[in-house]
Image (cartoon, rainbow, N blue to C red):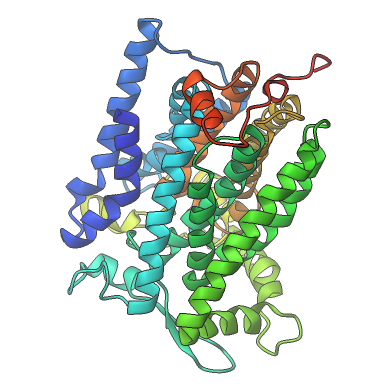
Length: 472
C-alpha cells in the first residue's frame, strides 16, 4: 500500500505544486515516501518477508556512482548542494529496483501493478487531452508561480501554415515531463497488452482503453519525441513479439491480436477526436508533417537528431574545466532551486546528454556511463532471452526497450528524461520487475486470477505458457 501511495504521489505531485505556488515542501514529498518505502523493504528483508537480489551490473554501476560522489567535492563547483542535487537525480531512485523485485512475486502482483499503471496512464492522458482542447486554464491556477510560468503555458506554431497550438502539461508542471511520461506509457501499454492476451487475464479492456487515450494524448502533446518514439516502438515491439512468441498453439497469432487491437483502439480514438475537434487535430498533424517529412521545406528531423546534438556535444569541450568537470549537478535539472541557497549556477550546460556528463564529471564520465548502461542492458537481454516462448516475454521485452531508449538514444539527445523523476523512478521499478520475471514464469498464475479468468466464457489459462522451456 505504501508503494502504491508513493507511485500515485509521484505522478500527481506536480498538480499540487502548481496550486500551492510551487511549494518546495510538496516537491520533496515523493522523496520522503521513497525513503519510507526503502525503510519498509529493509525491515521486510530482515524479517525474511521479502527477497533481495544482487544486480549483475552492480560493479559497473558503482564505478559511475563513486565518480559522481568524488565530483561533489570538485573545487570548481559553486557549492556542495549542487552535488547533492546531482546525486539525487542520478541515484536516489535506483533502490526502487529492489522494491520492484520484492513487490512483484507472482502474476497476481504483476497483473495488479499493470492494471494500476494503465488506469493512472488513462487518467493522466485524459487530463492532457482535455487541457489540449480547453487550453492552459484547465488544471492550471489563474496565476502560476514565476518558475513554472514558462513551463506550463508553452505554445508552438506550425512553420508553414502558421497555426498556433498549446502544449498541454496535464497534471505535470511542464509539457516536456508530460511528453516523456507518454513515451513510458506507450511502451508499457504495448507490453501489457501482449502479456494480458497471452495469459488470458481479465480486465484487458482497461489496457486497450488506456492505450487509446495515450495515443490521442501523444498527438495533442505537440512533442516530436513522444510522437516519434510511439511510431518507432510499435513496429519494433511487434517484430520482437513475433520472434519471442510461444511456438505452440498459435500464440504468435494471439500476440498479433494484441498489437492489432492496440492499433484499432488507438485509430478509433484518434478518429473520434478528429471528428469532434478537427482544428486541434489539424494543427498537430500539420506540425508533425511539416517538420518531420523529408519533402517539407521546414524539415527539421535531421538537424534535431544529428546536427544540433553533435554541435552541442562539441560545445562541451569549449566549456571551462571540461577534462576534470565542474562538479556533479552543476548542469542538471533543478539548478534554479539550488541557486537560491548556494549562489548563482555555473553557465556550463549543453543540450546533449554525453556532453552534459563531460561538463559535470569530466571526460571519464561518458565512458563509465556507457560501461554501466551496457552492463545493465546485456544482463537484461539475458533475462529476456530466458523468457522467450513464455507468457511474460511481451512485458519483458517492453521493459528492455524502454530501458534502452532512456539510456542511449534519448541520452544522446538530452539527459532530461533520465533525470526526470517520473521516468527515472519507473525505469528502476521496471528493472527490478524484469529480474523477477524468470521466477514468476516457472509458476502458473495465482488462484485469484485463474478464478477470475475461468469465470469468463472462452477464457482459459494455458498452463504450458507459464513455464520456461526445459532447454533454457
